Image (cartoon, rainbow, N blue to C red; front, side):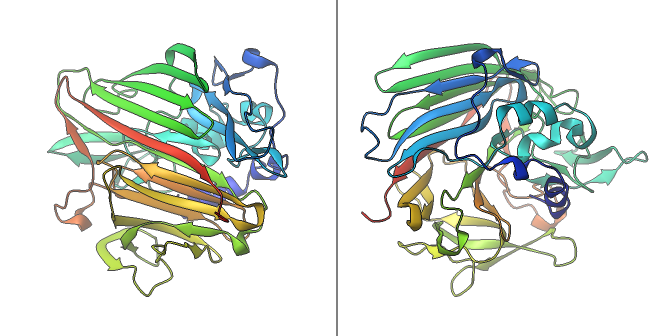
Length: 380
């Protein structure tokens, strides 16, 4: 998240509204956000409250399928919100496409917004009216909404609506499928894209799968990521721990926080979270990490809250996920663990031709982003 966007979000009442352990439940499917009904996947506890398990997932199909809230049972706490979000009613009020929500920018200020067809930020030539910027991909111009200072940030699906929604029961939960016929993303992309979503809730995991398919007639760049605000249930960040199996961080300028195209090994720095026991969060984090220690099933970052005997593992299952952005501001009780295809400013000259994670899709080709959430007890 850029500093400008962070300041803008802090200026809203959104985070101030995040005080309830579980958001106020609204009137079922009749609540709408972004002009579409809210979807809630649910399952019953099978442990009578004695073990960690997922209980629900709330989705905003009218806002790019934002995974707005996930709840789980924490022994001794009961059903607990695992993402930092306001109530559904408050979200419906502020996600109105106006003012601070122009271009849908507030969609990625809480919950778990998906970032497509790019993550993080893109720089370029700013238009005379200050509303757009232009950049180039393979010699072709792409014009994007300028939605954060001098950047285009976090993709183009913030106001897209999912269609063909279907909820199906499974042996231990529910699964939601849907598609966003994104086309050329409002005239801002080079071809036409369909985005197929599958979100599966089980007691031991929540699986997210997004497949982007080029249904147009021209090649296009594509990247997928997300922006989940994972809560620290105890509210005490001083004892929370983070594990990310990454060997390097992307360096940024101190003046404007733009990437320099250079990397620094995390060893012997405050950004080394590779320990099997994790490391303390520290006061504040906003760093892009990469060069992961991968196994046959991808790699996993995790957040633990020992005071609540709670841990959440974020398992990246797609080989195209090249970076993880960690964002956790001082004096707040969340950590955004953002699994992404692309590095920040992927077409910036600073990268000097390096593969920055943007996948090229020829007509008819697809790419899939897949991430799984798992719960664990730090004491075991």
